[in-house]
Length: 473
Ligand SMILES: NC(=O)C1=CN([C@@H]2O[C@H](COP(=O)(O)OP(=O)(O)OC[C@H]3O[C@@H](n4cnc5c(N)ncnc54)[C@H](O)[C@@H]3O)[C@@H](O)[C@H]2O)[C@@H](O)CC1
Ligand SMILES: Nc1ncnc2c1ncn2[C@@H]1O[C@H](COP(=O)(O)OP(=O)(O)O)[C@@H](O)[C@H]1O
Ligand SMILES: [K+]
Image (tube, rainbow, N blue to C red):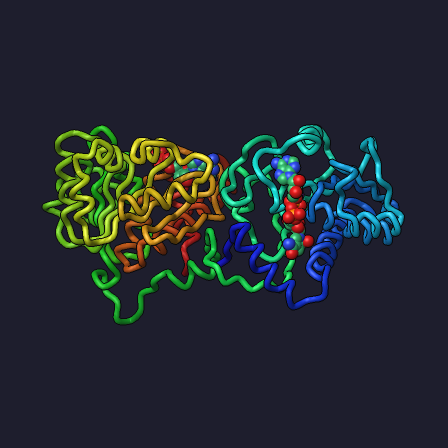
């Protein structure tokens, strides 16, 4: 597992560590890591000696990092220019060292550079970019040189990953100590480019703002059958999805579930004939009440919202079993008809809204703080919320949140969410906790989208097929 921490927690950890070290140690560590990464980029583009670097330097320690790194590069024969957002307020020690190493302060940007270092704003940023920093970020968008951001790209809301205004788009972000939310979540995350972490030796005692699963986590959580296993002990997942109007949703959620770890998939709904024909291993029934025993339900995708659909939702809500509520099931929750049934549940519920469904259910869009909004909805509904997006978020009612690092735009195709829901249900039925099931499903769904994209354009059926190749063996 990796994790990202909020600014206040980073500052507290830095303060505690700084108290044990000679002054300037942390900035020296940060600048050394930054200079190393700049040198690697310059070498990869040709040569280090004689190459040209432009530093964009703000008024705080972020600018200090850039200036110290610039001094190191100047000492290696790089022509380093520093453009200061406010010449009177640049980091004093950094500027002295930079000038002594042969760096130049410029008021005009050089016409050609091999690398731009964004040292305008770090974790001290408040609100949208202002003044000279705003002008510089706007101008930078029109240049072609690679950009390395110091700690975070300037212009992002560090704690939420929101973009309050224009921001720097970096090819690489060299971040210090720990990840920050803006590097992994929200519309800011793609602006960070490739994120490289420089170890400062921080000890984090606060809970992370958001966690990220890694392959090793998914492999550890994934249940494997053993010699004692049978189809029932591996878990049975039930699918109350699809309808005569939307048989595709039934097929896709089934395909997603079949890629999961359970020993059996049951389908209950009006698309049962086609499901039985195309997926012969699935045991089918027309209604939830006829389905037989399962260990978790998936309800909603393509179910429609008619009287029959409401009865099926009611049956799923009443079952003392983990349940995934997706798509039409979420729509049916919006008017409050099922609010008491949802609240009365003792088994875990996972809601899987996209932004539109989230807005209808929560009353407002996820907004500038996607993780915070998902956590609020999770607490309010007492459900795990999987908020879909390019960086899908999983939030639990007890305040834990995760962001999925494997997303890919090829997942944004009709029916892709149905596949995700099926897999998620299978993981729940196999006994994973609802948070782990949601995190693992999003992670593998992303890997499947990537794998499918390698063979060309991607349909949700391709995602389901690819899921079988990316699940742990
Ligand atoms: N605290 C530490 O121990 C360490 C900090 N380091 C660096 O220090 C950075 C934080 O430094 P600071 O706290 O000085 O903060 P920043 O360097 O992020 O700059 C804050 C200053 O920028 C200006 N500013 C804030 N918001 C603005 C906006 N929207 N538009 C224009 N100007 C704005 C304000 O004048 C403010 O004083 C980190 O991101 C990191 O790069 C590293 O050197 C590692 C050690
Ligand atoms: N731009 C994007 N980049 C990456 N993944 C995306 C993007 N947009 C949507 N997704 C993912 O695609 C899936 C779409 O699911 P959903 O909205 O339920 O579609 P459908 O109802 O058609 O199945 C979700 O897993 C979501 O996280
Ligand atoms: K920066």
